[in-house]
Length: 325
Image (cartoon, rainbow, N blue to C red):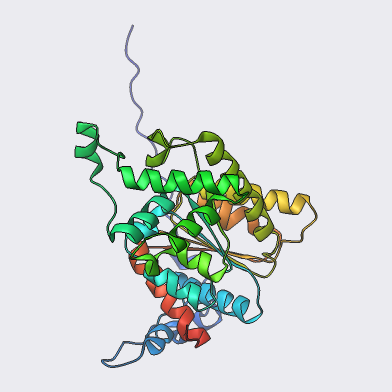
């Protein structure tokens, strides 16, 4: 059988650019104007001037919107809720966040179980975060005795007293022998009466491996915290939820708490949600930024490293509100 002979394609007809229909540039809508541009920083200028000099576009505009929303919420005594992944504490941001707590920018906190681990170790030792690779190789990873005994003991006592995990660990840090408790988020929350909810996934945290761990206590205290979180989310109308650094657990827990609050008849529609992370993972983007704000409010995504973004946001809040601790 003879192979078919390729037939050269006909060239398309030449376009006639003399027939292009133009529009006057002055009548064309433009998304960027000179008034939106940044102003160069000058030596000795204040942080407020730096903030005002950012371009009124994209991420800088979103940062301003997040700052303005939280400032309005604080002035109106609306709920400002913060979801904190453990990484926030690991990268040295607890003192910045404690300062925001002292200044009235925090109505409630939700965190995962690892947040308790790092907050407690820093309060106890002034150090945290072991080198996982070598420790896993020799079987010592997660086997710090004092960390496990302090956390598991606090949680067991909290379960017996009807407390949630956040309140139980906060009480331990506030009343126990922790020389660095002043920089502790959980101890400060206990002192100021700010509710903290901890949402544990059994087996994810190092103290779960120890013989002192009590599965019933872990489950009971974490479930009480889910109920407390739902009560907090139920008050988020015209408030703000900042979500910082949890890719899976906290976005899922927040969404379920919102669903439960709405099911019980609480009006939570006009809410500003802000996700801060150096990536845009699926669950924070969908469960924090997009889905909760479908009925009103606004979802904002700020992309960057926590150790840069959170201090920048915190400084903006302090400048806008003009408050001292």
